[in-house]
Length: 66
Image (cartoon, rainbow, N blue to C red; front, side, top):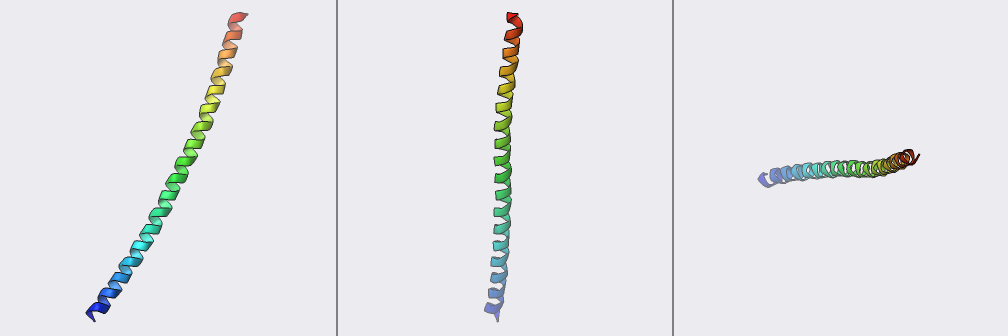
């Protein structure tokens, strides 16, 4: 009886650990997805900023030449 009880407890603990592992993996996947999205958005904004700076610089040069 003692070993049956231990086996049941062990099964419950294994099940709980499995569930927690799955939840942790899902959370990590969400964090990774969020990080990738932010990196992509940052790259896009950096390109847009560079383009705007070039346009401003060209406009400024043109204004000085006139």
